Amino acid sequence: MLNRLSTHFDFHGEALKLRSERQRVIASNIANADTPGYAARDVDFKSALANATKGLPGVASLPSMANSGAISTTSAGHMRVPTFSLSNAAGGNPTPLQYRQPAQGSMDSNSVDMDVERANFADNSIRYEASLRFLNGQIKTMNLAVTGQ
Image (cartoon, rainbow, N blue to C red; front, side, top):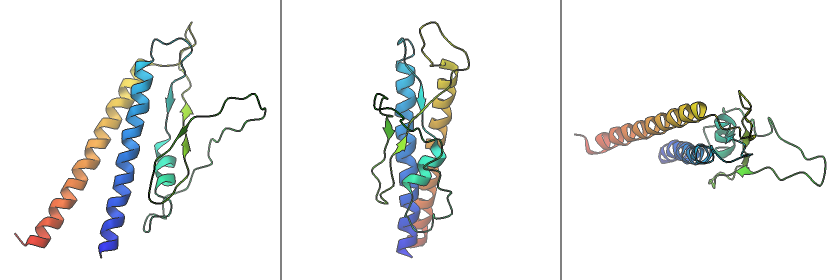
């Protein structure tokens, strides 16, 4: 029984860490909105979560998409792709950051679209808070079951 509870919290803990890191990436995009040549980046949350929770019992049903959209280097002169990595107990592989395709080009080659970034920031914030509320409800329910009140 304790393993099931621990696995449940491990999964949501990894999801919260991933949401927090995604918020950092989006905030970096917003901060660099006026930086010439800056390329907006983001995280494929679904594949990153599958990667971060790989090996946790009870979450094997998540599809592993760690290699989808992988960028390969065909020349020694290519730049290294930045990675998004979570330190997780399951030992998943780092998930590469993806570059966002701009909807409209700009004169300074900056691909940050502030409307998209604001929407992603708000969406990620709401999902983070929803996860926290869900976990809080689960903890209150377990506390109620233990204390019997």
